[in-house]
Every structure is written in structure tokens, then in C-alpha cells.
Length: 394
Image (cartoon, rainbow, N blue to C red; front, top):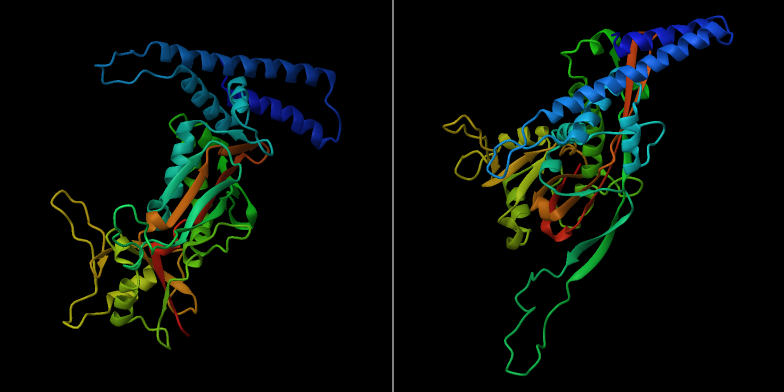
């Protein structure tokens, strides 16, 4: 039995020959193409049946069992998607899966396994993505999300002792607002907005995990743009960035130098309620600058992580609080907010929409298959009182 790649190559050769001579396909070519197309469909169906048959052979254990039963529908969809990544030909299984969502520009929704790999690679870039609250939704409809700007009990006169049957004479309302979490479409692009490409020879190697490779590359490309937006974004046509969404700010002295005194001021400008779970966030250049600072007893302010007995390394700390490195934050030399301190999970929320899509375009004439992907995400500040920022002065 011929492989899908061989059949696709024959079909492409017929089309290429007609295009090269600027003519329509002949009757014989049309008949040959139809025969090859029928063979390709039969091969794909055979592969799907074999995948389902293997799934049927897997043991299904009871509650006491340690092995989870294989989902035969997912097994067939994974096989169909793998074939789509290798050939650009969408089988019926993949088309049927589209009933769960709407494709855009010819793309196809991805199975859970591929989506999870893509999200893992997106999360790996950008420190805030590992700290913020994550909201996963099945659709991208605008979502009104509650936000808090004040009224967290900062003073001791917001409650009092009252007599039986009496009413309190003091207090302050908690001020709630709303922010709309949308679903900005992040597309993977490279230099010149070109999609990634993989050679046909590499794709034909059965040992090559094309899904993992594509998820890795596309995830990185999407992640770098999204990571920057959730730190620096204006909130207009893009997410509202962490460093743009609070008025709680301490400014450096003229010249922009980070000092021990300013770091202490920043820590104590945050309400103690949030300090228990607080972390620092800044980029690696800022970390290097702080590493050179010492306290009044000549001890380094930033303490690098220590290796544990089992080889794990603890996170670096600054003034006793963990440090999160996020390269999307700007340098301290700029006249902008460049560092944050606070409860990052309480402060920021990230929305991810389930319908990740991938478009595959095979170009047999050049020997490459190219890939585009879209992921829909947004982020916003949900509690502006849970953190404070440090701003540079030039």
C-alpha cells in the first residue's frame, strides 16, 4: 500500500504539470487524479480504522485499575490530525471535529494533546504567565470580569464596635469595577510574517514527532508577543499590561539608580495583607543591577537560589521575597514602570480560549510544508491594590 505522501506527490505532480503549461487538466489526468484521490481517502480511512482497532485492544480496568481506558474517538482524531500535519489533507474525522467550533481561514481545531503542548510552550516564556490567575473558556465571547480598585480595609476606622441593635457609624464601600476580557487572536509568524516550514523529507520520517515540533515552534512565537502585551500592553486593542494597570508607584531618584532605600520603600508601600504572598517581577538586566546592591550590613540584597538535596533549585529572593524574571519588563534606565512587587495571582488574570487552530499548506514544488497557528488570549489587572510598581527617572 502506498503512503499518503506518495499519493499526494502524484496528485500534486498532475496539478503542477498543468500549471506549468498554463492549461487545464486533460481527461486522462482528471481520471488519474480521481483515482489517486480515492486511493488517498481509502488509505486515510484504513489508518483511522487501524488506530481505532488498536484502541479497542487496550485494557479497560475498573476502579481499582491503574491504567485509564483509551478514548477511541480521541485516538482517531489524533491520528487524523497527525496526517493533516504531514500532508495538509484533512480527513473526515478532522472535519467532523469542526462542529465543536468554527475554523478561520481554512484552519482546523486541534486535539487536546496538541493544544496542551502548545499551551505548555506558551507558558514557558514569560514569568507572569506562571504566576497570574488563569481562566480557560470554551468560546471567545467578551467576558465582563470584576476588578477591585480600593476598599480592602487599609485603615483601622472602616469597622467599629456597635451596641446590640445599633448600626455601625463608620465603614467604607469596596469599590468594584469591571474589565472586559476579550480574545485577541495571536498568530504565529517569523521574519517577514512568514509561517514556519518543514521539509517533506523530515515529515516522511515516521520517527519524527511533527506535532511536538510544530507546537514547540508555534508556541514560542505566540508566547513572546503575548508575554510582552501582558506586561506592557495599553489595554486598547491589546491586553492591559501588569505594569500599566496600577497607580501604586514608587519613583527612583533622579538618575534612575536602584537603591536599597527605594526597594524598602516599595515593599512597605504595599498593604501588609498582600505581602504574605508577594513576589518581585522584573527582567534579567534589572536583576543584575540589584545583584550588586548590599544592605547596611554589607549583605547582598538579592540571594540566588540554592540547590536542594534532590537537585532542585530554589527561586532567588530579594529582601526575603521570591523573584520572578520576565524579559518582557523594560530596563530601569527608562522613564517607565519597570518592576512590580505584590501578590501577582491576586493582581492579574489571563484568559485563554480553547479553540486553537492550525492551517497546513503543502508545497510539493518546493519540498516544504508550511504551518500557521492562531491562539486567542487576553489579560487584565483584576486587583490594582494587590501590587505596586517601581518607576525609573531619567
